[in-house]
Amino acid sequence: MEVTATELDPAVITVGDIMAQELVTARGSEGVLGTMEIMRYKGVRRLPIVDRGGQLIGIVTIDDLLEVLAEELTELARIVARERAHEAQARK
Image (tube, rainbow, N blue to C red):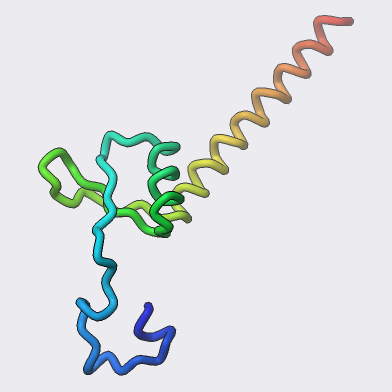
């Protein structure tokens, strides 16, 4: 993406020319909030997820996290709505 976005010639650019020096990863056991913290602190939009042996098991993206958080917020909104309805019924 970096090569295309900056109109560099992909025939002469190597991966070493554009890669980050530090590989940022998270463990598969890391929670959503911890993963978000790593991504925010390191300034990355995609985060390789590794097992205990350092083997790649997946990649988490900002879009993945937004989807999970949106689902969680939707569920919280449903809980609030049910609780309000329950409280209104109890007051009658």
